[in-house]
Image (cartoon, rainbow, N blue to C red; front, side):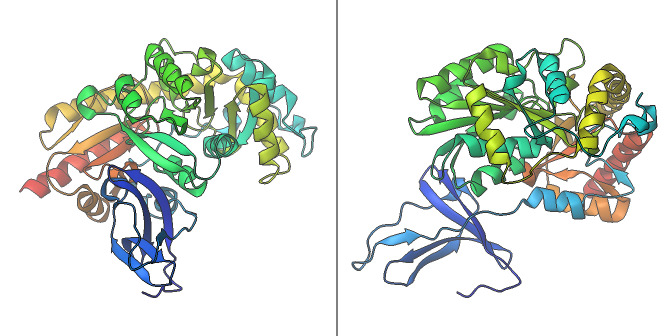
Length: 428
């Protein structure tokens, strides 16, 4: 089998019920590839991830079969988001509407191009620390939550370490683990249980080899909230095998009433990532951060030297200004999210072809298409109704799709109306 230069092979390790598999994409198809020491291609069979992983290869004709190893270096979701998500009616958003610079009480004349920010800009670190009630030494600046997750995982694990990640999961989190050559295991968040984290399921799936458990709270894509008691129990489970718990809290402030405190306060086994990108409408500032114990925080800062010498200082200054007026940013988005949620509630009540687990918080909802293929439905929705939503395949749930709230209620209502008309055409 020969690789086409125009179709790169991307692949990763993943544990499934039958053992470790090695997956890839070749000319648009997925394969498990193994090669024997004597140079023959031992297997090239269809493969769709951990659930279909083959048994470990064994000695055959005196030749030990080895898995090919090639580092995973891409994100299908991010590529789709940047190239295919846009439509006149965009339900594929993940964060709230952009907050206009002219509405932020800041004097542009106070901005400077350069500043003292070698390992973080002190006023920004102090603002983040005050927001969470932590020591500034525990704060690591990052370029958004995605880079925060990358730095956190990379500082914690080594190639071959086992990482336990929720299912469904935000695709780029899996991409990070695979790029870092982790052995990925999954624990289920069941739809029939409201997509909640079940500590018994975490305990069932963890092993003595697990070095990191990864959770999003609020859950991306469903907006399910994980209670502090559940997080605390998960931390106990992690501590029992010497693992840490990484909690991506980028959506947590979208619990507008009674906002939970950060899980970082639950114990030293917790590492938290977040940013101003999703709930506050200032994604362009790329103001992200990690909360970690000081020794681990320094590992992350040193690691970030490989990626960026220093952050963009005007962005840091504007981020400090955003923290000074955080309630202003949050309340503006809150009003739109609440209005959109009311529209969504009425829409779902009228539908029989789709369903969604309801939450009273968050900026996203994960909708299940009861019959049919969600990818095909979304392609038609975009082609015939100029409306986009995020395919569930990017969360390993191909019969679902994600819709985003908090941008424009008139557009959101029109988008749901077009979804309704597309569904009617499907069933006609």
